[in-house]
Amino acid sequence: MAIRPEQLAAQLQRELAPLYVVHGDEPLLVLEAGDAIRAAARAQGVSEREVLVVTQGFKWANLSLAAGNLSLFGDRKLVDLRIPTGKPGREGGEALARYAKELDPSGVVTLITLPQLDWATRKASWLTALVNAGIEIECNAPALAQLPDWLGKRLAAQQQSAAREALEFIAQHVEGNLLAAHQELQKLALLFDPGELSLSQVQDAVLNVARYDTEKLRTALLEGDPARLTRLIEGLAGEGAAPPLVLWAISTEIRTLALLRAGMDAGQALPALFKKERVFDRHKQALCERALQRLSTAKLHTALMHAARLDRVIKGIAEGAVWDEFLQLVLRLAVKRAPG
Image (cartoon, rainbow, N blue to C red; front, side, top):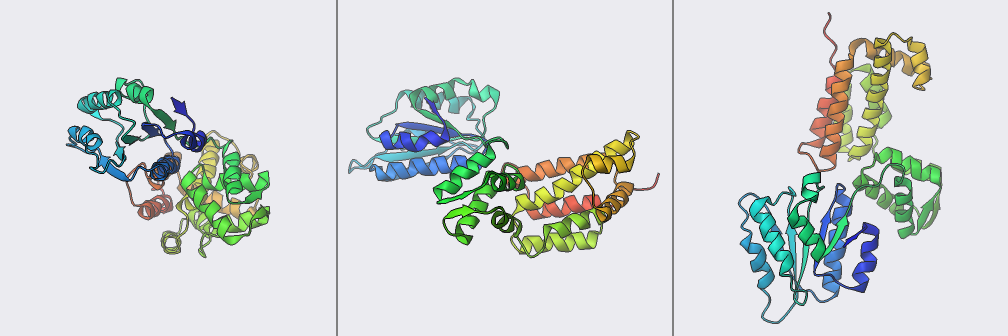
């Protein structure tokens, strides 16, 4: 049976199923679902827990052994199986299918955690067997249009509320990264008393991520000053700035420059492009014009691809050192285009 993440709490209150399969593209929701299941198991007398992580060379016989190795005192047990790749392989698939048929709800509760599943994995017989035997929870991030509602529910849970405009402001600044959104909401709970939050309170809390202002970083990016960019990135890292907000600031400037560059390459006049992209400040227009003289369409496209990869690094679904990647990204844009 498949249920949504928001239905899990009610299901756990009714009964503890013998098997839960948790997967999705949003690490925060996957983590919270797993934590809720583990907490409910403890509350209902499941005192033992064994964690199995499927890595290269994993022996699938250990799964059956874990389920059968119960305490002499008759305590119930939670088998916490994690498959980081989502690909158990042929042997693993067969072992999981057998395991689903041999569940013992009186003694063992099993939690299987997977990443986002591709189309082929969704059709796999082992996953079908697991879902038919237990409960499936797919934990995907809400679309940007639904994110303000998600934020509103989270605020309500901490006895706070905010107008739609304030919720949309948070949503735009965390760029769909729920881990960052969660951190911002926790910050609001620490800074303000229960009740309704004003837009100005939300803006001050979300934007005040460091003494090194991200607006300075955006200006330095347009100026192309490598020394200043290096200082600002190092400063933001040292101050503990939220990486999603830093990425939002950088990506916004890159996208604007890419659109302006594409329009210029198509023969459009720069003043009209500034109006189209809502760049009205005279000083910023001058900075953009100078930046466009050194940045080609290819360079800006490469930078956007780099930013997209950095987003995956921040979310923990790609390898890399976040602040080193930030430095590489901004210095990529600071290098002047070779003549000719």
